[in-house]
Image (cartoon, rainbow, N blue to C red; front, side, top):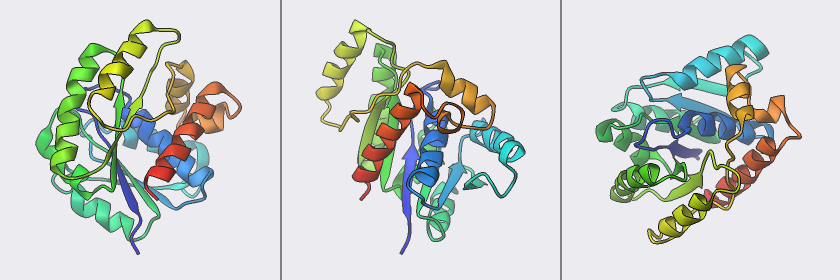
Amino acid sequence: MSGKIIAVAQQKGGSGKTTIAAHLAVALAREAGLSVAILDVDPQGSLGTWYEAREEVFGEDGTLLSFRTSSGWGARREARSLARDHDMVIVDTPPKSDSDVKPAIDAADMVIVPIQPTPVDLWATEQTLRIAESERTPALLVLNRVPPRAALTGEMIDAIGDWGTPLAIARIGNRTAFAASMGQGRTVLESEASGKAAAETLALLREVMKAVE
């Protein structure tokens, strides 16, 4: 029986896709005890750079993850191949290119769409959701880099509610801990396990696992 495939997608660059993908992958491996593969389809290769740093910290056998890269058109085949040998496959997709994103979303059991609570991010997200709908892949919106006590966040949540797409209860705050841990080849689960960022990551993990059951 094949494992589940989760694509992390957002047409707008700078949405925090790679950070979400890395943290979710490590959380699935560390906290849920699953075998997890990550697939980097983004030509920028940020997930691969993080994984290389992770190998330096933990050694090749201590990363908890398998890692592969793929071009956009090859993402469907590579993701499904990895799913035959892993419980979960997390795919980090490129921004802005519909043709490179569609194969990954088509292969996925679910697509996670990070969205920062700004009007510009809101506009860009609609295109990503249209792709998911066209590929008949369920989507879960995740508010990312949420500033504390921002009235705009509430307005964005109201606007998102008009779409009818599920919005995760868990929200990822605008915390430097995420970027700092990524720069070390780690996640906040490993660098600040008792911090708020780790708690937010675990809350998202619980929602994602429930959604893909």
